[in-house]
Structures are given as structure tokens and as C-alpha cells.
Length: 230
Length: 281
Image (cartoon, rainbow over all chains, first blue to last red; front, side, top):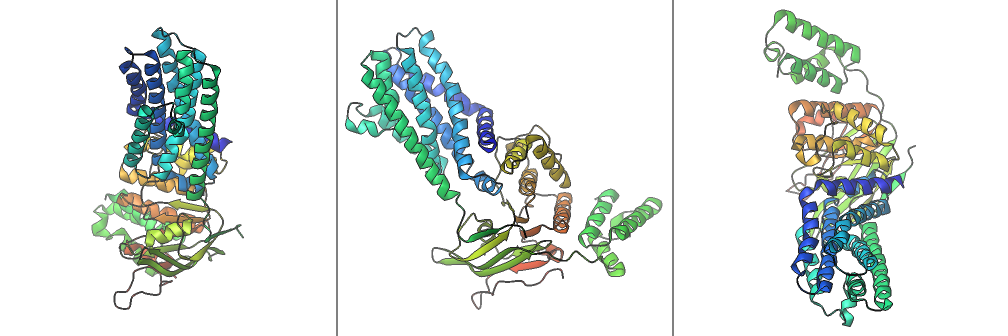
């Protein structure tokens, strides 16, 4: 448990010291919200959620890429793969929750009439999905540029795809969009249930994906035999 | 190099060459007295410290080194190919507790690959490695976190072994001091100079008190004093029973090691049979 918490803490410290990144993390959802503010409220809230998702995914991607060289030696220092990826995920979720707070308050200050419980749930879903999503891309693509371009593609698809179409459910942030519809448009409870279920399943699948990649990359190699000190 | 630096280097050289501690102290004290009373540049009076230490060893001999202990690392028949190119063929190395092995060879001959295979960070196409005890590994570069302080690196590595924060920090600072670096500052790793960053890297690898220490040219960016401290620390670790494998291209240090593995391929015949080729008896 101590190892897990230590990795989470160090992830948090690293991200908090990247002031430029933090500023952009806050700026991105704000821009997304403001740019749609004069139009339909639902669109600006959905854009805000997507902005939070993209910001946390990007932070996760950068944190994962930066740790690529460090993790093998931490493995030798006594960490198991799950300490490393779960610790990092925990740290990223914490950062995501912290940056979500001002974006939960933003529509409130702006006087938007919506279900705030729904907004909280949608933000939670965005953050929950975004951390393992960015980590998985970072684990699969070793270079930040490639990862960022892939993230950009996914978010653009998410933005442009018809949410009612069956393909939309395959996009990672569909859950927060569905919950946002319940939050803004006062639709039936089905939107909330479907969104929560989708968020939970996608988070679980992505976390399993991260675990699988990390376990392969940081596995004990067969050629190496460890004997106790004789 | 002033007189103090010269004397410090001489001390390290005598220690490296395993001159008995009392005799070494006596030699250094005599040299210091001579310089103080007679004055003059030690380089003119005594010559380079390495050369003077060599003369001392010839004159008074060395203390018998501790007998090598049990085998800590045995790599047998290591073969590695990248596509059609074979970078390692049947490389074999055995290192015992209390020995330093140097892995040498031309650029691109597979030195770092061999070390990564020994550390279990990369799989060979053939061969196996048996390690007895805990492994420590210091990469050529990287291996640190840009935005963390040195103390946070020590805490992170220490937590892997279940060491509490305070003791991990203290152990890290003490190990860094052996390299002539006060590590307690409030400076993030990204702001450290290349040499200091390598000191951090090296300190991290020794922090978990490994039984087998693998070092991949860890002295990149070290100044002369740090370089001497580095070999001095390796000697101390060897004397404490650590098995050390160091990748190096600085052949002038080979007299300080017990085993040499040369991975340079022979152009005429294809390959040398890699193996133990010499070093300090």
C-alpha cells in the first residue's frame, strides 16, 4: 500500500510542478465552455466535459511517457507492475478531481439551470475514463507526439460523431455526453443509467488494458533466474 | 589541481591499489609534510598522483585483497540479434561477490544490450542469467524523473524496499556525499547538470544495497574529482562484498578491475570468443 501511495504522490508532485501544463489543463475546458456559451447550454456543458476529458488524458499520456525510463529501475527496486500503474492512475485521478472542481462551479457561477448532481457524475465519468485512456495510449505509443495526435483524433471523432448512432457508444467519453443530456435537457433516468454503466465499463476495460501492457512490458524475463543470497 | 586535490587523488589511488590503510596514511602524511615544508607544485615534486601511487605500490607492495565470495551473477551463452544483425554471440561472464567486472568493446558491440539482458530489462535470443541476491542498475542516461527533487527520488526508490522516508532520504544523501555531492537541495532533477544528474542516477542504483550492481557508463559528465570518487566508491562496495559489472570504454581503468569482458568483434575472423581476458589478479 505504501508503494502505491508513494507512486501516486510522486505523480501528483510531478504534475503540480508542471505549471505550464496545469495552466493549459485549466484553460482547455474553459475555452471549450466559453466558445459555446452563447449557443445552446447543452453544447457548452458537453464541450466542457470533453475538454476535461481531453486535458486529463493528455496529462496521463505525458506522465506515462515520462515514466517509461524510470519504471524498469523501480521494478528492480522492489515495485510490482501493479504498484506502478495503479499508483500513477490514482495520482492522475486525484489531479483530475482537483481540476474538475472549478468546472463544476463554473456553470453554477454562470447561472446555468441544470441538474448539478448530473454534472458532478459526468465530470467523475470524464476523469475516470480519461486517466486510464491517456495511460493506455502512452503505454502503447512511446513518443508523445504520436500519442497526442491519436488523442486529438479520438476527441475530434467524439465531437463530430452522431451521439444517437451505434458507433458513438464505442467512443470513450460517450458516458459523460449521455449524462450531460440528462443533466441539461431533463431527460428520463435512462440517460443517467446508461451513461454511468458505460463509464464504469469503459474505465474497467481501459484499466485492464493498462494492466496488461504494463505487466508485459515490466514482466520478469524467462532468461533471468533469481536465487536467494547464499 | 592544487596540493589538496593532489593529495586527495593520491589517497584514492592508494586505496584503489589496495595499499594497506596504515601504510597509505603514512605515505600521504609524508607527502603532505614534504609539500608543506618544501613548497612547490606536487606535479613537479612527485609527478602525477597515479604515477606516484604506482611507484609506492612497487616499493611497499599491496595488502592482500579479500578473497572473492560466492558467484553472484552468471551469464551464459548470451546471444542477441536485432533483425539480421547479431550484436552478441555466446557472451559469457561470471562475477563473484567482491569482484568488479568491466565490459568493454567498440561502439555498437552490444555492451549496453548485454547489461540490460543481465538486468532482465531485455530478453536475449539465447542464453540465461542467474543472479544471486538483489540487483541494482544504473542506465547510461535517463532513469530519473525531471520534476522530482533528489530527496523524492530517494524516497521513491526506498519505498520499493519498504524503507521509510526519513531513512531513505538519509541513506540517499550519504551515498551522494561519497560522490562529493550534497543532495539535499531544493533543485528538480531537470535543473541538475549532466554530471550531477548522473550522480543522482548512480546514487539511486546503490540505494537499495544491491548484491549485484550493474552500471552502464555511469560517469558521463563527471569531472576528474568525481571520477576518482566514483572508482573509490566502487572499491568500497567491492570490499563490502558487492559484485559489480561496469560498462566502460575508458581502458585506463582496467587495472582497477578483476575481470574484463571484451565484446569487440574481430574483423578478420568474425568474432572473438567473448570471455574473461584479464584484469587485476
